[in-house]
Length: 451
Image 1 (cartoon, helix red, strand yellow):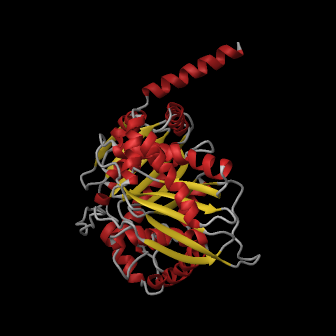
Image 2: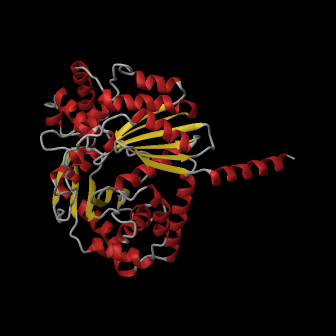
Image 3: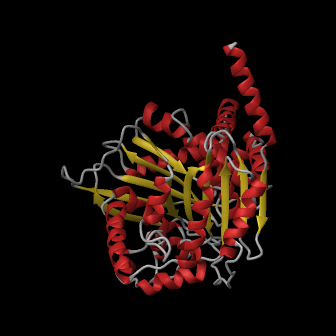
């Protein structure tokens, strides 16, 4: 009888998933809304994506988008400072935000019955943010300390910032999301208020909701809460193009660190059209090189020939603008950064010449299918996928096609992707270690993969 109840429960779940739907709409004021039903838990996730990030900033005013993200929690006349997060917590939920080169995202997870309450507060702060100069001064101290901890006193953060400054040619792509310290010291409260008025508008936002909701009724609620907010004329944008990306540059920095660090950086396209082949192939190449502990970089240079204590790679095809394909590592004791660079690049050369094995390709396909199944267990991940697809301009409807094309990548496609990288002269950035003491020593952590 117990087994029968389990079978019936599984059948009911399958039926519920089959009947679930995703609806989208664009409000009269230009705000895009996507609602995806998922009734597996009485929970709802809300993510409000503003299409503004560090890429929209100008020299001398870097860090505006990230600083405004902080100030959005300083309240409105109806929801005072700190009250937004306090209410979400009281409703059994959690909230946070993040800023990137392209977007600023505010996200909450709450009991589904409180979704409308959260949306009402989100609509309120889209139009009525009200922070004092004292709030601004206090928060900028927090942000400057955040920069010190994550970049100035963090070897990997310092290397990553120099890498972007060296590999990207366009100033708006080179600037750190958190901003340069010199700019953080001179930003004024008025700068953030102007930034808020310029970019925080419904026609520059996408609201993504996933959870135990009725999609049609939720769209109606969103129209009631956000539909009256006025659209506005948005500032002109940088193109984000890196067609003339820096090639072959070298840069070096130093910081207290136990080990040197190395980044080998190639220019790479993002997925602009759903049928572009190269970004999918680069994504598979990334997985072959650094997807898990059995991938080539880890196997070749940490285990078989221990030239490094940690290696990794980075590439993201789901961005609105051009991107980077990065190989990175910490050389082992007695190994130079030049030796490790040659080793990392030799894996690209080997794939460009000989391709990849059927087993490697199958491993990546299996992992991609598993990742998609795992994503179904997380409403937040589902919402983020929708948000990323909307941000790129592909649209949420492209999710199945993107997955299909990713799984259709052939060994020849991956070989061509490696040849695309090999044809470039990469940018190389090195961090030279300085002596450390017990207070400043950097922990390598428990693993030896870098992502």
